[in-house]
Amino acid sequence: MSKKRRIRIDKIKSDPTLSAHEKDSLIAQLTNSDEVAKRVKRSQVEDFKDAKNFLSTEKGKNAWGEEERQFLEEVTVNLLPDDEAPVKGKTVMRWDSSKKRHVLMQVDRDGRVIKDKRNEAGAKISKKDADQGD
Image (cartoon, rainbow, N blue to C red; front, side):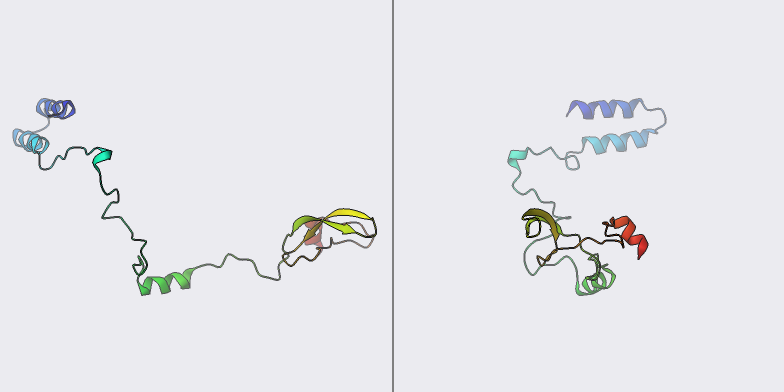
């Protein structure tokens, strides 16, 4: 018997709040070798998966039934933005023929240059100002 288990048994024996019958039943639970399993070494374990909580990844075996799958399709929220919303492009170096040099420009997915919005005076409008003006 382990030292930890002997200490528990001593605590149960010295507990004044428990009756003699309760003490005997608790001690019997601690000493019963069927209920208290020995700790298995990691090198001796053959299968690490927990049989109760394991979900198979094999094809054909699904965690969801047909009803649950239909329910999930109905309640799923589409987080993709609409195509009409302005898409921020990535910045690339492009040749500017008027400046006769390469310039950083933003391009969209198709490779077209995204032009900056300008006001009546020809100055660039920041994104914050452009949203307020529309």
